[in-house]
Image (cartoon, rainbow, N blue to C red; front, side, top):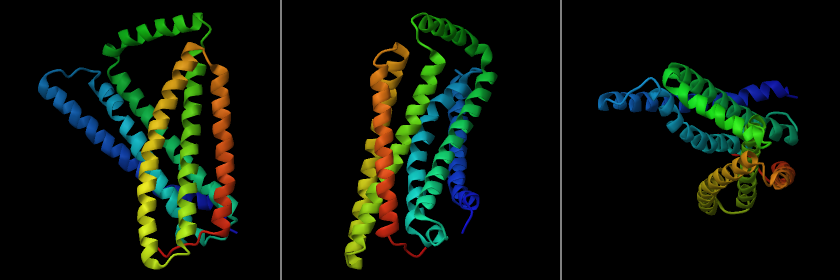
Length: 259
């Protein structure tokens, strides 16, 4: 049997490379926008930080699509599916490598923001002082800002897991159904699958942004916290149900295709 760690490293390789490519594109965009600010004459020590903040949303959105594609490719290609390992463990390794790759992106973004914030600290320090005053005001009303930020991060990660499990469910169901069709119709079904996955991706992204906005309002305002916990629990239950269904489809109905 293949070791968990060995398969994890193999699956993480391509996903980490995708993250590195995204970060290089973001750095290029930051440099170009900063140079443009310099040409216009409104460049300051905080320009790099503002550029990073402005461009950072794109890697989050694009990484979801790229990691979803990598995640689904592992289910139907011989490269990994022929590895001697239980389907449940295989599914867990694949999803974990996707999740860790996204966490890696978060760490890189945090480091980039920290470095650019230190560069522009002379300009950003008054803003930081105002933020400190706002945090103190929130604390007086019984709101824990650190807990609120951690709560928003937890919700975002759970929503991403839910999104990946949902995309996998749609993909595995259509893959299982297409195996009973002639080759010509399989291509048609695969085309429909790609369209559905793209539409589902945009729906998930919209849902993600809406949920994060609602959670941030609830946590910072210290309202509807019970509803927040119920919503989080519901999402976890859906993830568990979809995971069981995905593993069943993977082991009983989905066949691999040659690379």
